[in-house]
Length: 216
Image (cartoon, rainbow, N blue to C red; front, side):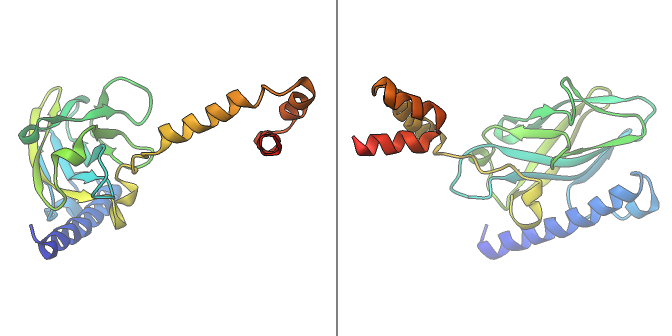
């Protein structure tokens, strides 16, 4: 996909996502404001409706690591349903699902809704998402519910930039292991001086330890 087409796809996804999200906040899935189908991933099967389905990748295109799925799930039925799995069948990716609070399965309450993605909401993480999908493409997403079964639709793949920053994964740090190893060596070497030197070191943080090392 060319860069111009990619930018157009991301812009269209952002506009549709923001409009549909505002509508979902103010009304149920069957309200009049939602009768206009948004120009993004949305589908209804039985009592279940899925809207605003997106795959959001790392903001840095060179970074490896997880991606996340963002969506709003509506249950118009009288019985609560659990989300048993969320998969990208064409690339053999299965999301790790966590509810907003506690453990166990993600539950969509009867006549209620659940938001996946964003701070304080449920999450669906694809461990190898960056390696499996490409920004600007469209992928099949399958949500499996306890009663309704499989609900599939196609969602845009977008990076966690601009509007999508608060919905996407954070950049995976790559220097944490080397940084944690360096203080360990310094800490193991600092207690070796005589007792008179070790007393100030225990009372003062790392600054005194580094000073004594430079003096030696």
